[in-house]
Amino acid sequence: MIKKSLAVLLCTLSLGAYSSTTTFPSTPISVLNAVACPNALPTDNAGFCPSFKSVATCYCTSSGLPPGMCNDMTALYNRLVSVFGSLKKACDYQKYTTPQDCMDNWNCYLSGGVDSRGRLCSGTKKACQ
Image 1 (cartoon, one colour):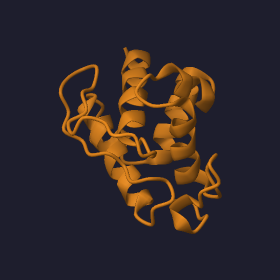
Image 2: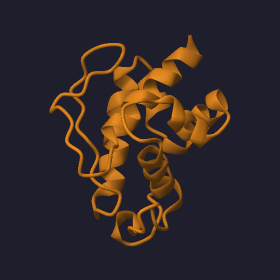
Image 3: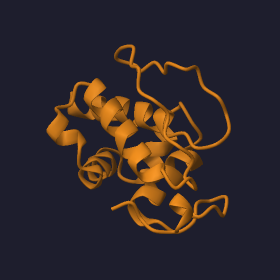
Image 4: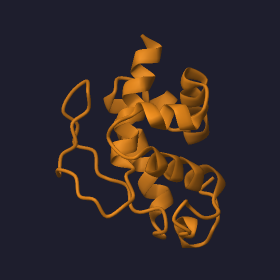
């Protein structure tokens, strides 16, 4: 049950955190139920960090996990990697955005630097944490 919930969570998180210019419907749909979570800002936007955390928390709690499990992005990331074995495998599993955008979002949030397109994470290269 937890494995399935985390898989669904990853799928919905990646959709909400999609950072390219592709447009999605205004109300993303999760596998479990209709969810009205916003999309995160692009990885190079100065507001990316709070945007990603807000979107991740929204999709996490909407997937049925308790809020306490959804507020700590490092713990949430560790759970995803624990279930799938790696971030790449987790991002490959989800189908709502490209695996690369999924990895860019998590890597920018947790580590900073530049994304795969050469964009400065949050405009500063700094991690969100």
